[in-house]
Image (cartoon, rainbow, N blue to C red; front, side, top):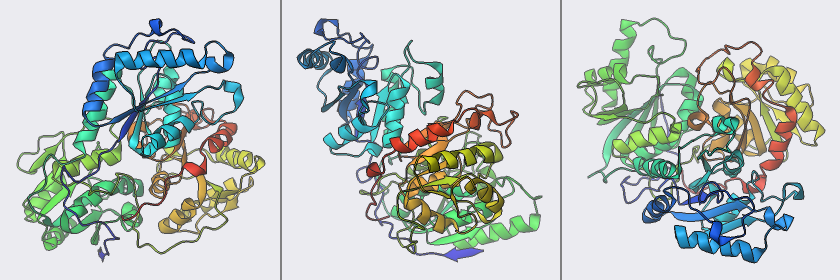
Length: 549
């Protein structure tokens, strides 16, 4: 089946190296243990010692046009262990040794002061981004302890952890991105910055481009920036998707036509291969008359079966990520390191094929601008709890979700419980603890409207987490560690990650929890942590709606 669509106000610009936006404008750095050796409560400039390779790494960032800021807790001021003048002298020595910084953001408070700036609160990250004329989503925060990463994620920035001997193992396990030292972190930041933009502009616009993401709703949503990149350099975009991604595919900007087909080498519950069905699919692909195809997949999926059909359908140029030798099936064979965020993984493939996002279109998740407005079901500021997940291992157990609803209600928050039509028994059980049950009352577009009015959403690693990111709503991520958080966590939106990051299920990629009792999301989450996370994610810092799509 196919569905014609309007493009949803996607900018029609040729995606080239000089036009597309970069991922990052600025890099923010913790001071002690990241830039310089950690000397507790240091007020003596003579004790400043740069971390190995720090000057060269910072100069690489400056040469790349990235602005630099220091974001540091200095509770010694509150404790009276050094003066503001002594601290300024230390900072002057840091700049003498490491070069100038574009902003210094300092929290002078102690833990008990209840300020909004002391890391792990995100206040300093917001202030630094504002001082640098950018947004947290366009910043990277590099630090040596969990507080640095938590502050970055809560602001919507990218967090890099560079461990030192004082970094706790659980902080390393929870970090989305870990580098062995500051030079390695800088190298990865610059690599990620480069690969999402085409090496050179395409000589001319493509005609019809077939893009493929045959997977679940969340997978389709995280491919959205890459689809927009293709649309910016093509006359027409046709999206081939599977049944589980149908609703999400209809929400993506930049798509002119949808084709739904179940691919037996991709589908999680595959039917037997039917030769007649494969012949019909090949004929349907030939009927698109595509000038080229870009096949997006997850790391564990192969694009080669579909590439063979595309060749049989007469598609002259095919691009895909493939570790396996493709022979003559691919014209652009792209490779991506493990752990790269899924939206960037897809964007890097689009860039390798010659497509980049146009100026003014940041690489965030986004929905079509022409969707009918869905009024929120209550005054904005409620909290959404979404207990279901498409993969059982990633769903927080119902009893724990009910306890979370009860804790939020007791703390004075209005709670809405959402779920699909097949999850009404689950949402009824969870909402009985004090929430309003919306189970089965919205489609995916309607759920987007509910999420858009929320203070934040409490959800596992499943499609609605990415839908929340697409409408700019902060996410409290009840994230089972079966897959890497840095790859699959909510993208470029304020986030707090909860759950046991060192649980035995870590990196198993299990669909069903292999550990009795699902401890990563039961024992690993206290409902009071969720209440604290809601307070941390201030709604005043949410991404505002951006023009265009």
